Amino acid sequence: RRAGIDLANEKFKPGWALDLGYGYREGLLPDGTPRSDFVSLSVTVDLPLFRKNRQDRGLAAALSERRAADESKEQLLRRLTSQLDAEYSRWHDLSRRVDLYERLILSQASDQANAALAAYQSETGDFADVMRGFIDDLNTRLDHVRLQIDRAQSYAVIANLGGLPR
Image (cartoon, rainbow, N blue to C red; front, side):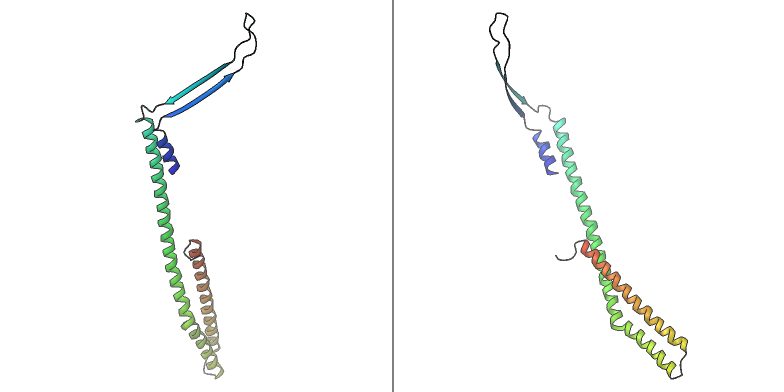
């Protein structure tokens, strides 16, 4: 983008060109003498006399394009930063929930299933209660695994957004 602005600024400067040419001519003149070769030199100077019309518009367009590119870059950066912040928050929440499962919920579900089994073995409980207890224990373990998967996916998104130290 900077090159476009530099190019537009260059149009304000006078341009010039130098051209040197040599021409070899074959043949003879009507009087029998050989035709002479020739050398030509031309100098061209392009003065930007009416620059208000063409060059100013070109520079304004280049500057506008640069501003648009900068704004687009800033907008993308804000969007990615917002996504990263949201994903960090999600990862922290999932980590907190995984920790809660590991500290309390898994052991409670297992204890309840074992208590139902002990009650059944002592003939004070129902077999359906034992089955419900072990099904609840398995569902709790599945929920724990799902939370771990969600947390790992969240971590991958954070890594993809560049939120991890390299």
